[in-house]
Image 1: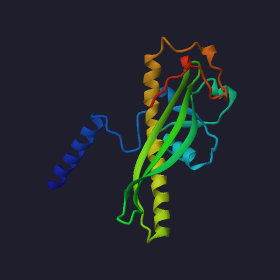
Image 2: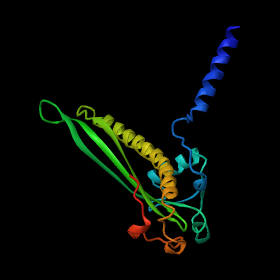
Image 3: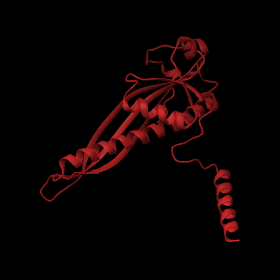
Image 4: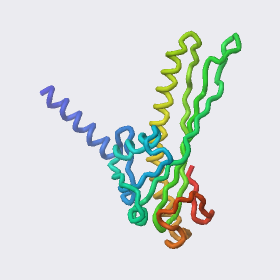
Length: 199
């Protein structure tokens, strides 16, 4: 009898979370027109490109090879720069830094064939305690934090695909004609009439 009650509670919890639109951490509802994507990066084997590809696959997005025919048919996610910085958040009595505030900013563009180019960006913040007595451990910890920040930034970029879809839907009347944007064009410059900034 007790096992039956436990099973009923588990079943009820599953039904409630499914009904409220809950998704496991790291997953999001990617728009159907972006379920197949081309990913472009200046460093295709770098840590950012790998993290973004991993997040896309987690969200059941098919990544295809870049070609002229594919870019004319499928959206392109063009990864931009990854910027890192840190500021002093607190100091010891001696005046040396006790805690840093780490910041990572990632920019990208979503190119929708015949519809427009949508810049997106995300910023992730983390705190890091500086321990001068454990230099090696400190460096290893900072590397782990940066890796985790990159993972969170990748998740947020994938979520931004929803905002691209919403902006594209709301700007149908103001989007340029298909011939305005040449599919497969490598130049990131674009006129203000064909770009919508999504922060």
